[in-house]
Amino acid sequence: MGIRIRKLSYALGAQIEGLDLTRPIGESEFGEVHRAFLEHGVLLLRGQRVDREQHIAFSRHFGELDRHDSLPRDRDPDHPELLMVTNRERTDGQPSNSRYTGQLWHSDMSFTLVPSLGSLLRAVEVPPVGGDTMFANMTAAYDALSPGMKRLIDGLHGVHQPERKGADQAPQWAEQNRRLNPPVAQPVVRVHPETGRRALYIGEKVRRFESMTEEESQPIIRYLLQHATRPQFLYRHQWQRDDILVWDNRCTMHIALGDYEQALERHMERTTVLGTPSGHVAVDAEVA
Ligand code: SIN
Image (cartoon, rainbow, N blue to C red; front, top):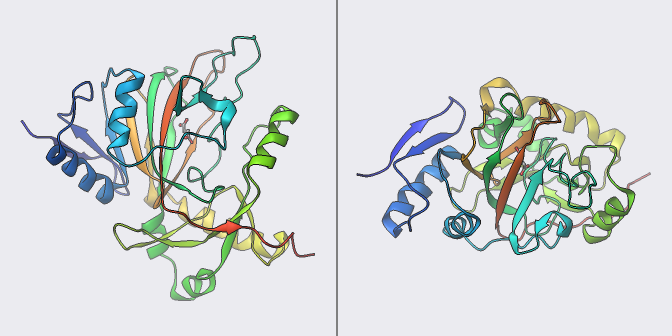
């Protein structure tokens, strides 16, 4: 029996049924998955009771995996391809470093020179309500801009900072993060290397455009974020344990919602597929 594909929302997302990731996936079967990935931007696979090796093995079909050298504290020591997104207490009793990961609109690894092609997030433990993840279709958002706005932003570069939301970030971690990840300038409009379609590449990690002040940049950034997160461009995912969600970071952005009972566990594990090199270390200090 082949796989079945069912759309999850008007804007983006589709559920794949009939695939069991505890078994090896053949090339032609993966071909169907890959076509759906390019068409829908986000794929949901439910009820996947896989172990870490099987999660990694499936992810490798999409490309070479990031070993998360830019986020060393969040990776699993035995599987550097796995990034923990968790509010589980650390073994030393300290709060998890990654409990706020993703709680702002972003595309994974946009603050590096090899931003991610795609991510595969596995829900190991989820709260009964809340803690959803929202996705925006950045191709549709770009297409809906006026010709004048497209001309204005074409050629601009957004300066992406590595920081996360969550004011109580341990200072030594914030310092390490800044040292490992200097601000990177990425084109505000990127051409998808496989579909050839243009997509907005912006998020809440962008505070200004290269060669412009924050004051000059902010109104346009705020407008683009508000535009891209209009309901018609969104899909909101309500997690179930053993869900695997795959998303294309080149044409979507996402946000993890922190609206859940913090005493309850939310433990997710993510592989990150390396994309093609993009951007450069931001050359100018902020223009005064
Ligand atoms: C992420 O941004 O990779 C994490 C998303 C989530 O935890 O929902």
